[in-house]
Length: 73
Image (cartoon, rainbow, N blue to C red; front, side, top):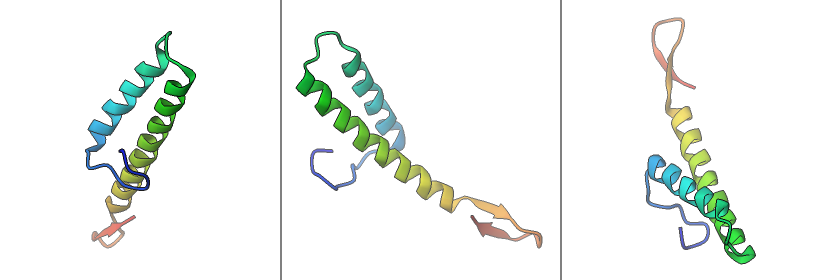
């Protein structure tokens, strides 16, 4: 996720793993203010990416209507 406004080419699971790594970095006692701010920004980008992926999947989920046919919600 090095370039701004560019989606990472990773799976949702990989993004969750990277978020966990960011959290671990932020919990370190010797992290500097600059490092914590950078990690926070990276974490927020990852969370935004995950939210977008989840929203996209939710829109593709199908439901059965009254006529027994499948509709997207």
